[in-house]
Image 1 (cartoon, each protein chain N blue to C red):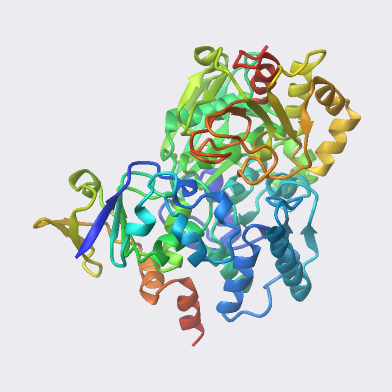
Image 2 (tube, rainbow over the protein chains, first blue to last red; image 1 turned 90 degrees about the vertical axis):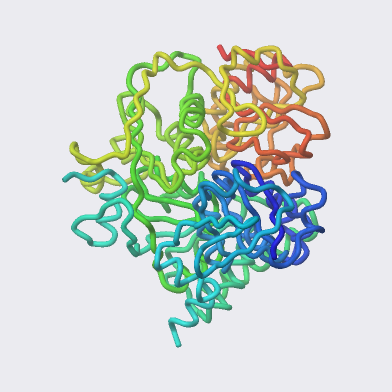
Length: 158
Length: 414
């Protein structure tokens, strides 16, 4: 089972990981600062396999790939939002972090609820109710299936 | 069926006879821009992908701007990695102290009408102002372009924004784009292209158009284009013949068309802490300020410094308020010195800094303290962007910012 962490609309990349931490030498040193301006506890409480459920326009703002990268490094299994900002969406797929679109999930669940994600089916089940997410375009699905763009390109050249 | 501006540019680039929104196409990239913050990551991913040589060193531009000059010992590491990568790859377009990437790219002709350009920064949308398809990407995708010279894109739907008539004297391009952001909201153009047109846009300088395309990413836009004209040709140093094909068809299909009457527009502000939280300046008059910032890739151009100098001519910055002015590039800085704008601003009490991103990205050069309020001409007022989360950031035009700096509180621009 995965624990749900909820976020509202228009969560920007400065909130996910603030600019001043981008100069730290690697993602592992940055990840403890994830969502620092919104939550004192997210980075310490999130466990591998947990889910982020958000409203519209998740990841708006800068192009920083560190935003999806710190969430992946903290073990976030997937992000399910009403909608995503464009660059964050591409970046997440390129680093192999599943991003799913569900117009209804964020209004139906609460922080701390337990959920089960079936990634291949694109469904999330919370308290017996199953929500179906929108499928990725095929090309993006292939990148995600490979584990990200680096693995995808290496696969291509083999 | 006719095509929008972005569709025409994608068709020209890919050689496809027609494209339609939603289609996935592979573009041949004309130019890329990488800045100092992300060059270490691009270089690392490039190696991890198994590439050894960039596809075309002439098409790669490396710009140091977020950390110039350095403010911590660790900052130097980014320049060292960037310099090593440039040496190894034979990159010649490297700018170490010349200004902000989004000013230099169009100013130096790296991003030109009709081209396809990607950069490791969300505000890469800026070059749409010269009729260039430009958009921001992450560092992993940038590494993939460096190896292949290509990037896949989804052909976006286009929202046409028609602005007609004469602007009131105290309303600038910044007020126009803020108003549009307030109407479209922060996700109103996600994955979509904006296309600006109408007599007002035709009347705007290239600098003003750059301001509008720059901020278009704040409503999620993938790109924000203006059809090139005589002004663009002069700015980008290309002939009218070269740009003749870069215009939307009269029967182009738009997702929607928004109409604005320029005469109805008023000076506005983006209030804390969302870029789409737009209110008329008149509603906020009297709000006390600790700092005013005039600069950035949004509003650090010559006409912006001119507007600031005009508002502060024979005046002084209010006691206790800090006014920070940052020209967007070295050439703008020099022009502003020659024109006397810098003299006026310094005399009024401004701190004029070197061109760069420092304060706008919250790294250096005027970071605010707990509970303070700043009125700034840059593009983001996100929580914690220019200091602690308790800092209140208002965004406005240079004219509003400069008038408010003299008053020590928010006032209407003249």
